[in-house]
Length: 439
Image (tube, rainbow, N blue to C red; front, side, top):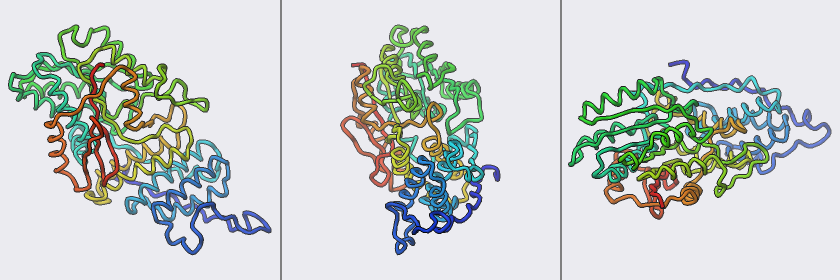
């Protein structure tokens, strides 16, 4: 659809001539940027990253002239319909322009901040979208194998599903339960009806989604109950936790309680305060993330599955955060370059969601900056601090993940890090999967 295509940035005016910038003096050289002899390499990824960093610094120091110069260069070397590196850089360019417009530091720039609309998926579209790459399927496959093992011999299985992709892994799990040798359990599914919209977005209410899942389960002879609890990541899903406590979820009800967290926990604030005085501390017992994990531990679940993207977007320093995001988010752009044509609608939807993430990381601050990824090591610390111990994935689970990866491009791989599984692209960590029991 035309409304969802990537609109080109309006052309920026050429940068002021050196004598217009600093009268009677030689033109400024941008620190760390290539000399004139090497300017043909501006399209190189390292150079584009340096340009973005210098532009971010110029915006933060309110140097509108220098920011305008660098943005002009970026606008000419990173078209929105270029190769994967150029498209990635264009996403960061838009985010920097948006940040400058919000802060008012570069008053010449607001008109070029063009937002890219996020598509609202139908169920069929979202299922196809999730299957494009192993980005989500990796966590689904590992978690579903662990769920089947935890539910062995149990007649009632209660899954609390905290998933960014709106229960997309559940149909496969229902299929697995339907063929269980001892017969399927009674399946209870509780989800957080999020009050915020994070991509990918669904064009269906959770009540309608639940009805479709119940009908699908019935077709597989699996009895199922679906419950939506309106709850927000901004307060650590406190309404959901309260509901689970009140209803006595878990062994007190004779059910196997399994908490499945798929790429959603990083939207819980990572510290007590959000602002200049914020100090991130994974050992803080008062941060919303720590309080959420402690509350989950008090529910005494059989198993907790934690899957997320293996990157760090928590720094309060814009340049540090920009570098971290740039050196991680090249991966989704690179992966779709291998199999989707540039004019593909699916690719436009995929990259629009990446642009949303980039803009949130770069342009937003405070409570509006919700993309606060933490690497696996920090989540391991948090889980241990909350009273959990890690458990490994079985060889059967590892085999299922490997079989799934065989369906995708050769660049995808998997490695073990102690008890955990890590999805890789061309050797770079992408997503981690961990499994936990109460200590």
